Image (spheres, rainbow, N blue to C red):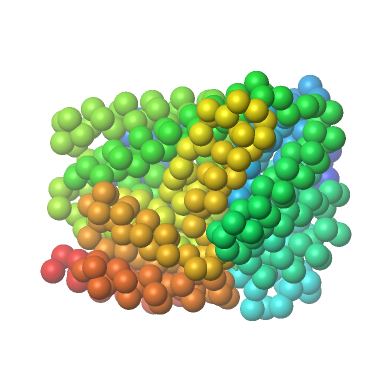
Length: 426
Ligand code: BJ8
């Protein structure tokens, strides 16, 4: 039985009643989505445990880290360089906002036509239900899309300390220089916050830790190319979600263990669905915990998701940071080079993204792509058109789904996904 975490939550300023209500929904939703899946790898027990303790043990670990003098850095975007946070002995956690909460309250601050992710972040802060947010010594915002950029101007009054990082919109030399300058300022800010110095040794250690976590996700991605699929898309997504807040070394070890198990499954030709099951790649907006709506619908129709071209997926983990620099400045250059490869739709032009989708679909043997756009997310919803046209031209059937966190459109999405899966079956 778990210890009583209520005093800890109270100390973190949570609204205990609202928090109980959140956990009361999250627990059963998780059970119903994950635990009843067919033939799950045994190693997923670790991730079930992490989820069962998502507001318990992991928060306790963060509090212990703070007690020991480490700083907790909460983030909303994959452009925040974790290498620098770890090099300065910080703990980085992703702040998820993958569910509707206190939407009416959030809409007092934001227009209704704001994407669910931003509204979710506001709702969680206003309702005081996220211990990751209140445990953070600093929350890092980034000037990416307009909604986030303008939202942070308001959000700064809802959290004790918000640091906003500017980001370029083009990958030109000027864009690169801006990112480098911003990462340098961020490192200086963290040096002051943590009272530590960014040394070359510490920087290399930070890079090694994040690279190891990314490399194991590459290993997992390759194994998901097998037919029959050795693991479900829901479980693949879950690992990508937990990537953002688990202890990096423990996470790497746990995913490696799953990969060992998947290799054995592949050797035995064992899977979670029969060979020949229609294979789908998801591409688009990030799916933060507990946003499992679309993947659940897809896998319930009898298809299997084999990869995620998303920030909670391969867009976020796709490249390693070179560790060969001989000075802090050279290592900083390598970090900038690596982060500039992330092909978020806030960049213009963003041609490398569609190339990445194509390359993923081919290497994962996907027969079709479902493009996921959050309603009111202009960058991804606008980019969906060119992405779809290009994929169809290359012979990859594509379905565009634009939705939010609500349940009202589940039936309609299900009908469209069923028709799409029929198309894939030929
Ligand atoms: S790097 S995808 S995490 S910005 S869904 S808030 S884009 S209106 S989340 Fe993102 Fe960083 Fe890019 Fe990734 Fe705006 Fe769209 Fe909302 Fe979005």
